[in-house]
Image (cartoon, rainbow, N blue to C red):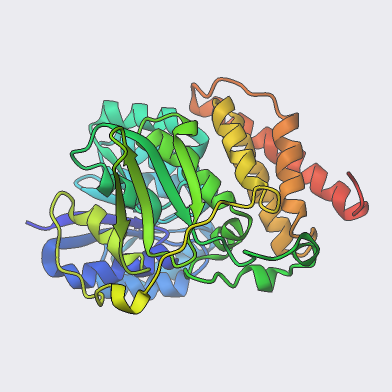
Length: 388
């Protein structure tokens, strides 16, 4: 019997990789629902290929057009549509390929409904990890990491309960080795050229600042129930060792594989089994050598901010995530400079008080407050670029 699957954010890079996995796995999986934000024509095309019963678009104004193109398919819209899609009756796995805070409530909805949530969208765990895990426990489902690094740690920990250190690897982003002067003049076009992975704009910018890796630290703390300071980050430019685990006896396990999201996505979908993959095998002889370096904390201070927010806990990571979404959007619009992303994040984290993240209302309010502060600070930077 095939497993029923919903893919949230099906038109992005995670969606593209998930469809490659499904093509490889054949009839073992059936797509029940798909969502997209603005790429409605791509959603229509995918719906005609995969035949889901329900789809969701970001804007209510697109509903009529999609209904006309897809007769017989139920068309939802907006945040409420995502929640309904995440709760579809009879679904086994919800793949969350959304970007940013928009994924929080659909993740909670899927967890409460007892679904397995395959998570590429790390922001919900950053914002409200405790609430999500409580929902998983009460609903009887699971959260499985899709990002290559947390997924690699998950694989290394199978049957190994005595870890003493988790090590997340990072490619170093587009500006590894650049001077601060060079980075101050970085354009969005330069920042969007990731040296290893093909991802969406927001995540690519987060990789360039190492904010994405810092969010993975917070995410891993929740996923594997370990303190923030038990998680280290190292730079590994080849992106072949996806992460490592050190155990109490001093031994280490590392997960190696091709630099392709197909591998972690397939592992999450087929767990606890493994299936053949269409990827070519990793050629260690051709690779020749692996290199590891300490992160440059001075040039990439956003990583430090994530550790700080993670140690503070409660709504501090919520505030930091909100500030970062505002700052990255402003940078992509060329309203602020690349290095200003850190300034917006730092000022917002310092300004926003930390409250218990004990309800969805508290998390949403912390997110709202931080966004307002960050947007105001961006406006000040636009008007006074030399503002300290």
